[in-house]
Image 1 (cartoon, rainbow, N blue to C red):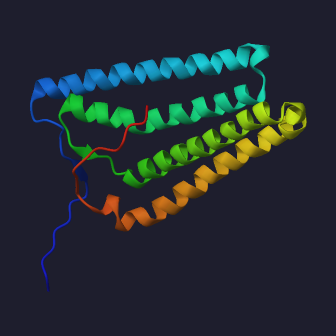
Image 2 (cartoon, one colour):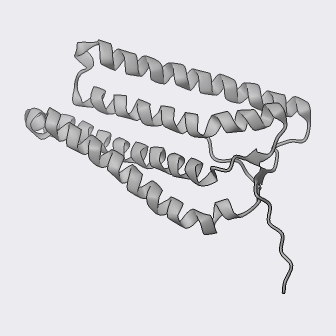
Length: 178
């Protein structure tokens, strides 16, 4: 019978073993994440409060800001915690973090594609813009983007127990979107 040992937690290997660089890592991530949270909050409040921004592009920007907030809140706090407290553990919900990251990134890519289509219609077919991108069509496209993100995350997370979340040491931290 072969011997095998399994650890119940996952470990991140540090960017640096020096405390000063870990502190710099923490403050850098804190500054960048606060700037991104502030910028996305401003976009959300501007689109919600200004009736001139109640357009298809404003609606998709609002959704894009929500996905960006989700990406930031999924990855950055754990990286900051690990840097500040000099820990290397990934919490037991590795699959949940992978699912949420893929969900928000998949939704973000889908929304960017829809926004490209919105600009195409606005530039190439300006007379048909109101009929092609009415409020109902925008709501359907946004719902399709969120559903695509969910399905992408579901497919990637279903494969991850045999992949990333089954190893006990990860050489790099989760990617941090900006």
